[in-house]
Image 1 (tube, helix red, strand yellow):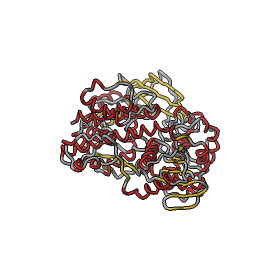
Image 2 (cartoon, helix red, strand yellow; image 1 turned 180 degrees about the vertical axis):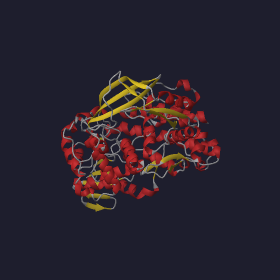
Image 3 (cartoon, rainbow, N blue to C red; image 1 turned 180 degrees about the horizontal axis):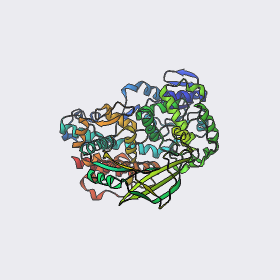
Image 4 (cartoon, one colour; image 1 turned 90 degrees about the vertical axis):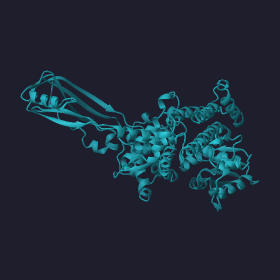
Length: 600
């Protein structure tokens, strides 16, 4: 028998059906030579400090830092029953081999390996790596199983991330909570995210609006506007001086421009678009997309790629035509596949696209949230292979006295992809949006009237989930090499959870009556950032860690726990003696401890 372990019950059920395992048992499905079971998230987690020493039940500054000599793990009490089932299945004499079928990524690898090791299992295991829950993709994946050892480096990266986060989070949370007499949750990713929102709010509160003025002149066939003028008196003087004078065309440029079709969605861009258009939170979008994935309607959602692999090119035209029918949309007459195909820009998983398994009649049975997310994914696929949006733009400048006045005009030549993704703009196709007469340099027009308009400078906007996700994606990216695939703080799979954690712990709140609400720091959130040192507020450490974690995943350069802990002590006593040999995990452990030492 082969034991297949998935990450979620729903995924296990889909795998079992394709594999022909039909007999339902308690916690698993059996049949056709397979046992198919599942984890329920993280069944195994790092032990609490008091499991290492009872004195750690009481939070004390004198006991810090807590540095486990040997890492301990515990089975989550809420999921112990399922863990025991997996342990029994692994130890069955008729089970000769195990297939890891958890989500294909860093954390999915960690979930399986921790269960495997906690059960004391020594049996060989293979790895299923798929990006779609379609029956054909599952069959292909099982036909091309890889040795589990090929993913050892990915597991090491996940393990290193987990343990280093524990060192920073556990010690810093206890330290600041003891120092300030209230529970202050501190984390490598959570804290910089909160700091961005607190800093933005401080900038908004400190902003003082400044008035400015523009002068609009009415000519016989067109209106034109001046640049910003600081003083009202000067603007009124200019307006008075222009009336009855002549405005002469000193510049007139006509250019044809185009905008390429947008790339496909990765999880972050889908979350941002759903927040802008539908008001969904990042977590809601992830949940809806995950549900669609498990229903075989879209491909794997937790991806950071916006492209497809080279071998998918031939299938895309057929998928485009089939997808257009789902929501009574029109497929592009000319389908251009090349812009969305690039294997070099695909890491663990390709972009999110609909599958060929989606049936129109099934869409009506979907919950509203899932249906709208599917509509976004389908629409983006159609738009991404459509022709560019083309338009002609005219810019004219008029001289009146010593001031220059400007007017712009735009004509849509071909709505292209915007006819699909932004149909309101397609209605204006081949129409002049701002009518301009034919102009040439030297033409002159009498100024019929002039008026002054007042405006005020505005502060930066409050963060929404859309803009915060974008900021998280860019944070620290400028300090990382171009070849690093994953930048920013968090990952596409974890950013939604980070935002939700900040909200549920009372550091952020959602405010506003509009569909898209603002993220505002609470008094508790501001207080935490006020006392945290710069190192814990900055995304630079996270950016540095992500680079090193990627190196570990690719090169397998993790230092074993024992030697790493010995190096910790060496570093604390003699920093200059720490090896500089490119051991990525050692660098991460070093930064975790040096950070703690500096803030203590």
